[in-house]
Amino acid sequence: MGNEVSNLSARIRRFRTAYGVQRASEGRAIEKVDELLTLPYLAAGPLAKQWAVRARTFDRFVRTILDERAKEVASRPVTVLDLGAGSGWLCYRVVRAGHRAIAMDFRTDAVDGLAAGKAYHAHVPRRFSRVAASFDGIPLGAASVDIAVFNASLHYTLDLVAVIRESCRVVTSGGRIAILDSPFYANASAGEAMIEEKRRTGAMTFGDRANDLLGLPFLEYLTQERLDNAVVGLTWHRHRVRYPLWYELRPLVARLKRRRPPSRFDLWEARVP
Image 1: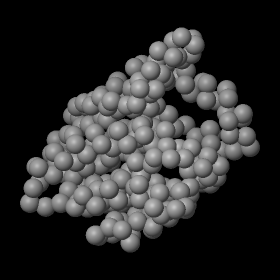
Image 2: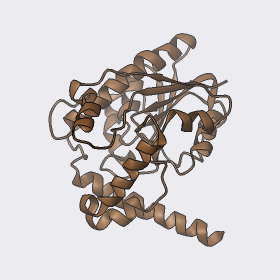
Image 3: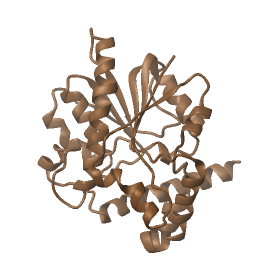
């Protein structure tokens, strides 16, 4: 058992290092503070198209979950736990809106990990905490936050049940768990087709980093069934997001080209009992 845990820890460390290098190679490091402050509304550059999608999800999160929770706890600010925070751009937006936030990620690099979030501190009315930890061991007390939001990150979990239970533990009764920008499929067969394609093309996509990036048994994708079966007592709701036209046309393009069905993001929400 000890050797298995040690081996898994080593694989996680290698993944973390390789992932930071891969993200840098993709141009995800934003070195200009004024560009960092625009996220998720990045208007120019090679990543602007991707951020245009994520901005739509974030806007729906604010309207549907953050603002609604603020009405429920009107006597105080909302506390948001940003799981998979990266640089902390979502925390920056939450704090600028008058609330409190905690940025949590297991990556601490300065590409787009927690270290990159230091640049936000001079531009917020109150600093947000940056915590390096894994989702299955959140270093916070029970019922200590209003919203736990998985920020393009839940598909990286190794144990969906443990992670959802842990997020339930730290969210106060009546609070919300939200999922932003993780790939959802209509059924498991479509998700498994994505995994098979990813592994088949891994060496060409990631080069020498392929083994480290693909070596962990991450969840990789979500379905309604997976969420419904994870934790008894949670009811999940999908809030469909209106994405740019090119994104909405992807299923049609895939059918015409006889490719596997693409994933979809949207916003998913559950209220903690």
